[in-house]
Amino acid sequence: MSIRTNVHPAIGLLIGAIATAAIVYVLSRRSRDLLADLDIRLLVISAAIGVPVMVVLNGLELRQVAQLAGRTIATRDAVQFALFAAAANALPVPGAAVVRIGVLTRAGASLKIATLANLASMAVWASLVFMAFGASGVAQLGALAGPLLLIGVAGLGSSALLARQVTTAWTRGWLHLLVIEALIIAADVCRYAVVLAALGISPSTIHALSLSAAGLLTTIIGIVPAGLGVREAIAGFLAAGVDLDTSVAITASAADRFATLAVLGILTVPVLPRLRKLVHTLST
Image (tube, rainbow, N blue to C red; front, side, top):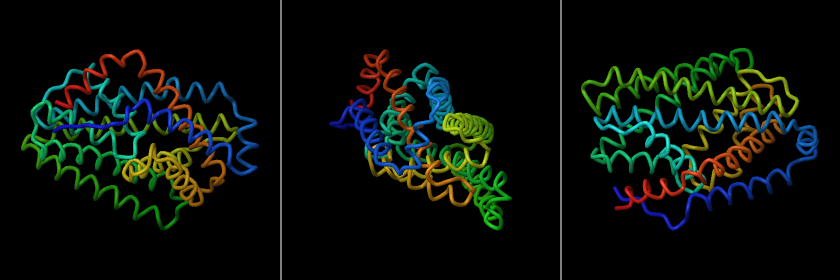
């Protein structure tokens, strides 16, 4: 599979950072008051720790997806591909999915197997988010909690069927994916909880999960650079259902995005020469 783009991921990150700053600037008065009281130290901590953890876990996820597809990717390469994939998500395409499928096809997997393996991984991730959202939000979501749990369970079943399409020896690899995706969601929730605390909001699991769910839906949509405006809109919409002030959700989402893009940019610079070589292997 050949992956070519005329836009360097670093440019996408820069566009995302600038546009995010513009979004923050035009936010409501309430959001500006929140930003005025923002604890910069907590926001820096959330990104400085949360983003590298996210990249490493995504690298482990990619390595496991490759193993499910019958291919082997070194952990170091998988983590650096994950870094590139995170940067690629700043472009107006489902960048991470394109990169991951490209990695697997370059490693020798067929396009069908690479796609199915990635879909299985995404289905596990999405299903766990739905299940966690439903289970932790019974009080706030009421009757909606049950359907969310059912959707999550059905999604897990679908992910198992997808994994079975990839290989007959799918059980162990699928269970490993289940553990990794759960860790990714837990890390995501912890990062958002710290961001909410930085805004002076007492964080709760359901509030952090609503922001994580907004990120999930934005990733799936993937039609605008870095999901600009889309993630904030979804976060604000979900906030209404979990007793979280809409302006708080929008501000938290925007602040996390800005901090995350900044750290991704910093992480990308030292490994840029190697990333170029990795990208070259996907373009030949």
